[in-house]
Image (cartoon, rainbow, N blue to C red; front, side, top):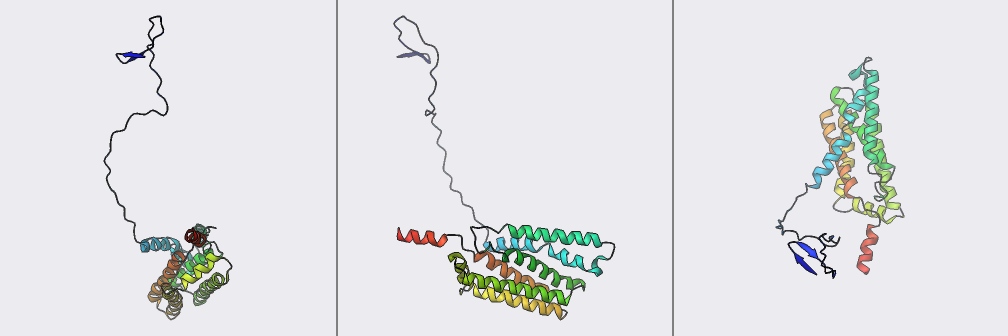
Length: 238
């Protein structure tokens, strides 16, 4: 086979010349020019920014939810608007909680998760309504008691569960590193309720916010993914 001027020629014995270019095989490709390898590094934000942002977005609807229920704040004219606001706040809170109902995260995939979101929202809203002198002692006590009960029942279920991941979450929550946060969350909620009832709404809001943020922090850091321990044990035996 001969070539001339970029054309391929094939000897046919008759002097004919093939002028059609050959097709390029799929596995054939032109060489790429060398590109310099520039090292790049990205830095993630601290975990505190993540759970603070998530907690803030979750608890945001309550500042208008419970306040909207107060007749002193809304009046008769804004009754329907208040109820619509309450409904939107509840739906937004539920939507936020349903994001975490994942089978791969057993400690999140419990009824306590949407209950925690709803009760936390209502409690903070009830305490915050004291800033407008519209708080209700009965509602504050009821919501604080419901929050404590929900957390206590969740801890009991984690401890007595037959699932490895749920028991591991309980062990994390009661570890030396996280146990102070657990005590702080319960203590701040109790103190916030007392401050709100005794006429100190600003202190109550700050304590309530601190307690709920501590609880939400524990919610995120204590989760154990499904079959994570089994993967670790298999790696050790391999």
